[in-house]
Image 1 (cartoon, rainbow, N blue to C red):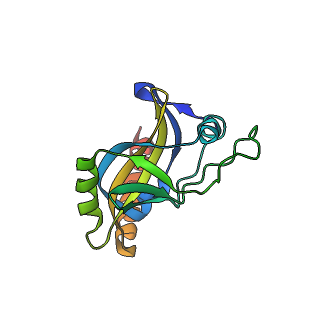
Image 2 (cartoon, rainbow, N blue to C red):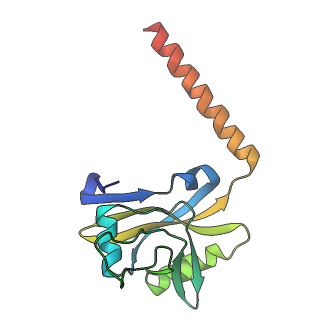
Length: 157
């Protein structure tokens, strides 16, 4: 899957669609990501997977855990590990603000999407609260109702 151009000069690498289904998104923040050279080349050619990824605050630093960036196809023995921890680049004030929110009970930091902005790899990080089963059912009911309304309107035309 190659990177796709979106509005604002951003090239989308991957999204975490599972995040919107399983979490209530409360706050978002754009942050940089520290990558090795082969990781950047791999992102440009084949993409990544952040469906199972999450962020963790450790010793005043934010780390992206379990993000899968496949090895670079033309790399050699010094290629990167696909699921290694990667440091996220944030200001101290942003880390303090997000760490305070993330340490509350039931809250977590999850990546929503990964993209290139002006040639630099970025991650959109969110503070989220997990959804319960009944929340998911309510969303399904709303989506079905919207679909029924659209079908009825199409039939009337």
